[in-house]
Length: 92
Image (cartoon, rainbow, N blue to C red; front, side, top):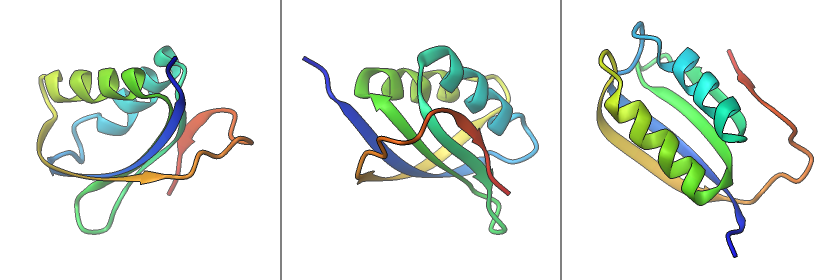
C-alpha cells in the first residue's frame, strides 16, 4: 500500500519565466497533491509537494517533459507529512 509523503524541492535551470509555477499548480491539482511553489531570489524555484509518491514522481516527469522548462538540477529532501494541509498553492 502506498503511503503519503512530503518532499521539499529546489529546482535549478531555466525555471523562472517559463510557466513553471503555473504548470506545477495544474499538475498538483490534477494529481491530488498538496503543497506550494514559489520563485526564489536566486533564480531557482522552491516547492513542497505532498501526496502519494507515485503522483509526486509523475509530476516531476511532466515538469521535465515541458517544452519550455529546463531543469538542470533538483535538490530534494524528505519532510514530515502535514496532515492539515488541504490544497496546493503559490507562495511569494
